[in-house]
Image (cartoon, rainbow, N blue to C red; front, side):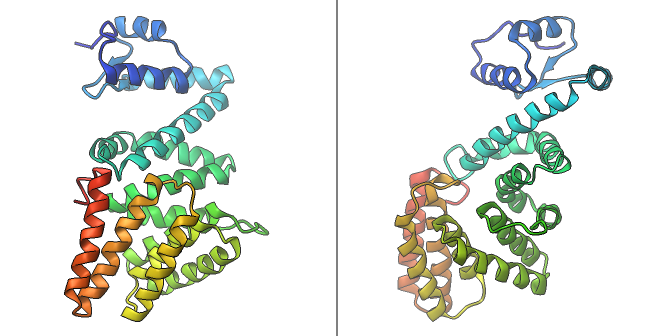
Length: 287
């Protein structure tokens, strides 16, 4: 039996209704009418679903109406906003819930990314890529991350830009994870040079955290550590949990380098710093 829209006390349902109204440009009364005729159903996660035949018919009618582009644009913009929220929540106490939402809506996220790319909206496609990269890393979608990084590389004559630089950094990261070290080094070299020209604090931090994960000497790691925490105060905002997640990760990485050098007491102090930050964020995964 389909669940009907007669219990709006459910907060998840209310949130879902708001999202559908924004993305699909359809009101709650219309959704109630569709649900009453079993044309729309609500699953256990308060998500609206359509029977595949109804979905295909709706898609055909949309194309015939001449409004397909407008509908896909609303969908792409709406899901970019949702993916951005869920990405930021991954390193907080809401991380497990956000991760499951990304699991459930990967098809929607991929559709928004693909549409943006096909329409030539590289800026929006790169924003999608940036917000999905952490999730793809955790889920092991490394090849997908690499493919999108390559597709979103610099266009002919394109100037430096933060989103482009972040894409190059992630390209190096996904290539490294798959053992393509020579290509990763080439991408990282481009990212490092661009980051230096941009002089953007967040971009600098992203480069430093990747550099610190490479097999470097303790002296180099200490130099990167000082650079990283000298740069942190210069950053007013951050796209992932205000930068705290990156700080926690860097303490952890530097702790590893100290432990490898046999300086266990100092390593333990770095791990405690990292753990304190993760606890403050409520990130159960990292804890």
